[in-house]
Image (tube, rainbow, N blue to C red):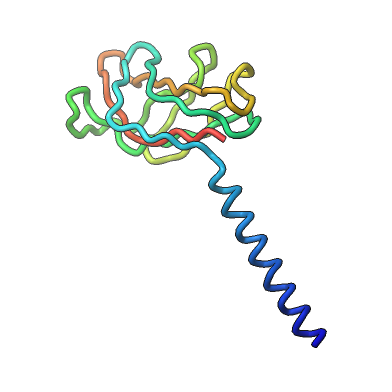
Length: 134
């Protein structure tokens, strides 16, 4: 009898841990963007999301980069930032990148904006991907 109670308790704890892990993993706010315009010379608004927790970072993944007319391109990266006042980071297509969030937007409930800029001053582009704010 004691072994069956221990076994049942062990199974219950494993299930509880797994459910907790799934809940925590899904406790983020992800916004998808599709063919958002990106200026080649200055940071351009792409999308925004509302924070769930007090954190100092957000994640961006650029899944596709298109020419300005929406056709396929060989472009491999753009520059992204969560504030026009923070230094942008090079975001390579399909590679997730964490970006620092401005201090004023680090609390839960704050809106965090994603800005992007092209990598060639003469070539505007369009990007698709995701913006995940924790």
